[in-house]
Image (cartoon, rainbow, N blue to C red; front, side, top):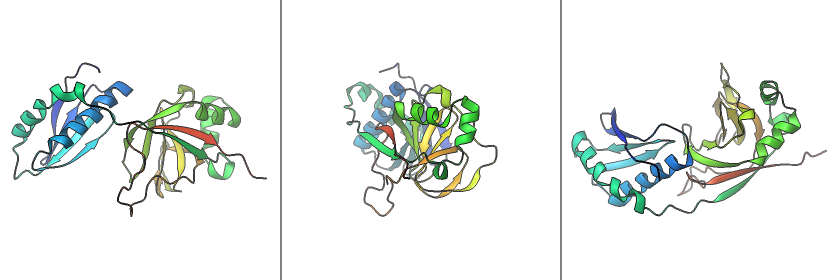
Length: 222
């Protein structure tokens, strides 16, 4: 576990942002998930919710029950326990993806930017195991790290107004999955029929932060 020297910043009048070293790495993600677990286990009265991200953790609380400075003191008391946290088991998900032209409208953009053929983009995109770093900003959106840098492609200057649920996309150095129909600024290179987000379920998201994903290319139907 890396050296832990978080900063505590005011996010809103009822939330604190705990910032760890601002790099995208599995080691920092381990710290974030461990701190999240410690706060949940501490069950601090008046702490409403925690929202983990790549290298930070937002803590929402009832401002009628906590002064922010006092809550920060309590959160700091949890730090010594980080190294003792047992990390939850990381599940590996195999996600079947159609990379056919009808499901990959932005594949030509990625091909042009990378200099790779369609087949090469598919091969490179499916050869790595990806780590689930974050869930959000849209309901169920899955942020994945570990993509081959050859596929790095800038986000669109003007987002599409509508993208199909299950769209697999590339944005900068990341790849991800859109769980719902939504606007999209990432480059769509495929689509999966696998469902990870069900808002009607007791557990809306099947996949968790810290899980791993492998993309598997579907064979085209002729």
